[in-house]
Image (cartoon, rainbow, N blue to C red; front, side):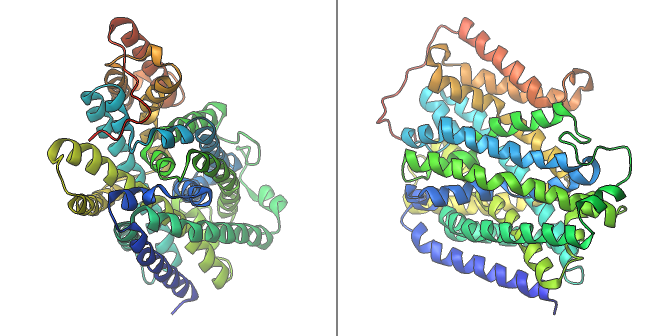
Length: 471
């Protein structure tokens, strides 16, 4: 029995032990299960934010990109950190004060029913795409760490079982408490793994000298270019303000102040991990130039001391666990709150509603696993899906800061325009006149929003601050 296997098994047992403890705190209704009873302090908010951000894309995906484009791949995490910072400064406290649960609920509260319907379709799509990426990375990690135990497919299935199981048991409390352990493990593993990898290969200078010519491996832009990196910042700031994961964490805070501080601290935690993983991706390019790019990070780590490699790979897997649990919970909340409870069974009892949430999470877990089997390119797929949050962010920001421009139909038509733009980007190559779809999304959504402001005479009504959740 390998040391790496023992470490992973111990980590899995620890996660389920935490989840069983969290189950008691999650008892007592849907608010406890989905939003931690709205009692998350700044530390738990920060851990949840960092856990959500540092997942497959921020570790395996960054190393995969660095394998071909250089250390500039680390800017992906910097972009996520910028998004968390902007969310903390501008919006986290606002969400908590509004006492909402989802963006679709907010859309109906301020706009209309069809705005809620179209936004929930878009947001669930985003959650499912991102969740599927965690399975892909989980399979890569486990199969590289323990090839005698896990195939790539077996690693994905095992990851799915753990992700779904933890979320089903304790909800957001389970995710929040597990994230404290996971984030600590991520830092311990990634920092140690990077230092030892660089030392093992003779230092950064030696690594740089052995990299193939033709790419600026250690320059700020590398093989990516300014437009691509700027696109990451636009995408991550956009999604941080309206994707269900960050919104749910903000709404679970004990106060607006805790929400704001938690996101700012979370931004600080997120920033360095990407550049550390990028360095290991470059080391993998030197040591294993023929390896599949997705497997670059797990492969280089397996060359370290068994204890260190076990801890580091468990840390990368912890990143997937922490992200996937929050995403699955968010997707379940969107369906249960904005489809089932709103349109199918408004009179559902509290106990049955929690059961519906758990059944939904289980079903979505299976569906996202199927998506993962058909996905390629972690970063590319994830960034494409996150571009869809443009419409939600634009509508939210205007609702809070420019309500005079908002009309009853603004949410619906802006969201519809955003969806059609992303679909057109996929189907019609001729419209790809910019480096990333996020730029086109912002252009189309702003034009649509302003056009509705001119054409539609019916302004929105700002609800009283004490307005409760729309059911």
